[in-house]
Image (cartoon, rainbow over all chains, first blue to last red; front, side, top):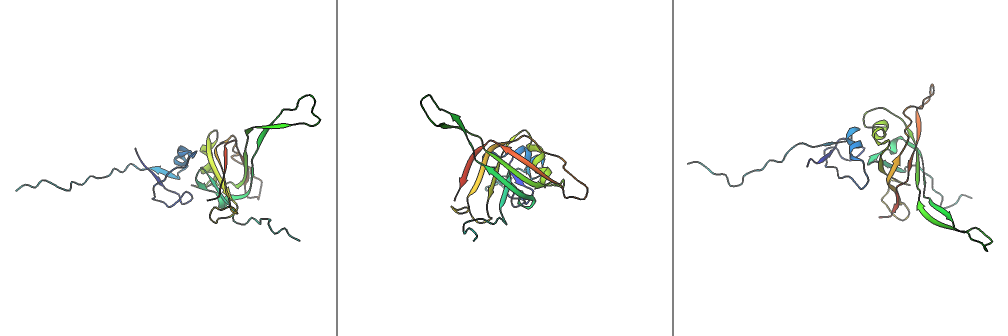
Length: 53
Length: 138
């Protein structure tokens, strides 16, 4: 599930993740450009990569 | 003699749907109402009422701007939907002397999209209806 990221400083610190409180209309915030859905996926780093020798 | 406990409002905080609209707001009135039902019966000499449903209402006066991430952008998508609004007397932390009032799941029925007169700064009054009332002191 995409996380929500703050865009406008009227909502919080831009770039921070947005955690909506009870009753908050998230779609209206997105439509108004105040927050956006982050589509960035986390990159899994293999801590024990196989090496060719 | 001025009342020592009267509040001179200079920096109240207004938040609509998590958006800080303090810088656009000039007046706010929150009425907490519990609708009365008349339960008067024969033999009584005075009317008696019983509380039923809460019917709260918040009216805000706001400067209307169409710039990105300002008043219109905040409110346009809220018409006909429910949201949460909060306000408190000052920007200080919530406390018993600075309670943060909120209406959760209140309804915005009407948004004046234009209310302009020549030479005046455009201002609108909006009303949020219903919702669950709370007063946070921490």
